[in-house]
Image (cartoon, rainbow, N blue to C red; front, side, top):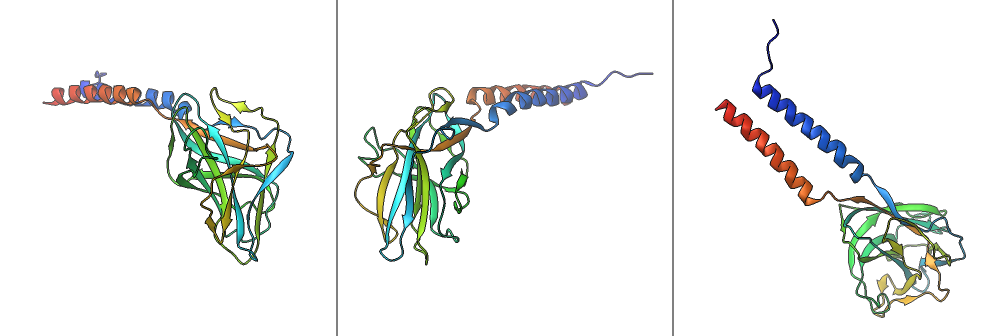
Length: 239
């Protein structure tokens, strides 16, 4: 003879089903997506991340991007390089910097937020740089992708980043890439105390920014409350 499932069993099944539904609902929102890109544009120029052994002179290269109307978790920044001269790539570094106002980088310096990890761009091509840990990009905020060769090595380090003068871009609403690449001189691995300047060509870095949606706190609270009510009901039944 068939027996009806117990109330405890029904509650457990209901909780599991609720978790499954929520997981399916949140999963697409958490997938990484390209927020803004100009990598399909025509290459016209390049600015060089460099460190020269004989003189100790170098150059940092940066370009800004602006986020849209929602906070997002940064997944990575992809950049197009024209080549790289040092096989060791020991000094190459990528980082995410904050913006110091509407005149930055001319009114810099910018503030380093975190280093990005990725391969040294030997041989050129598309290279991706990702956060070392989770980082939430604020809504409607300007950030900078900054590239440098600050660790002196036994070889000249020359890493040209391609630029474009086609200022069109594709991506999500509100996201944009700055039109002009910024430069800062380096001496013996130490950034100069002077301000950043825009490149003379007027071209912007070819880059792409990817990010994931951040679950809204209200959704997480509702989920916690719903599961809490189910568990309380189960506890009362047992008692």
